[in-house]
Length: 86
Length: 202
Figure 1: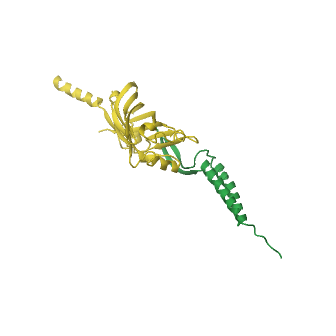
Figure 2: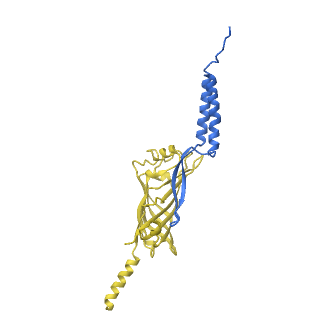
Figure 3: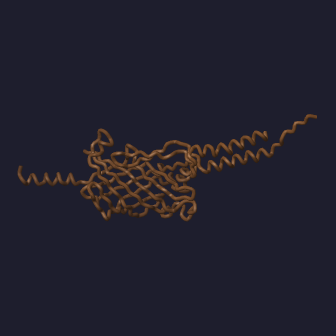
């Protein structure tokens, strides 16, 4: 159990920044939609519509690292199983 | 035809030509928008509203006589972060359930300048937000597009009126968290309105 939690903590600690980097390293807050501008050629107005897209931000990074720290911390409550050959 | 008969007809035709047109700003193409921006420490809060309606009476021969009211549905205010949107709509901020409309109603125009189909003016009117009505003056650009409605909405004939305005308001003037969260969200709000209205030919 201890080893499993430690591995999970490592996966989260590496995976979260990897996802953050892969999606554009947004240094703002997490967004679940992004504005898309379309030009109305008759009026010259740029219309704004929102497209659903998950864009993780620094809060996502913080939550990920926090989660990894919790998992690593939880692993300390489990003892290593000692195999006694005698 | 006697001259006495012609004069009233000419007067009537001139009056009809010069009469102001009523432009409806409920946009079937959903392009009309109001953009807002508030500075905040991590990143500015940028959003927009699309629920725009209202009518403006505009005479291309006499832009100074423009009157009208533009309404923005507060519920249509959107930001890309769902938590920020929830806060924005909540009773703590805009309280959209209690104050469903943000409106601007014209009172007078000053410094009207016309250049071809474009007119600019300082429009004074009543801006209502969060249950508070306040008189403000906004620089506005009107672009009159004669017979262009058909290019935008097939099978319809008429004119278009494009209105653009950029201005700044202070949220504290409208009792939005007055004296609070000043370190988290700026008190000034940049607003940018880009809307087109249609006057269908009769």
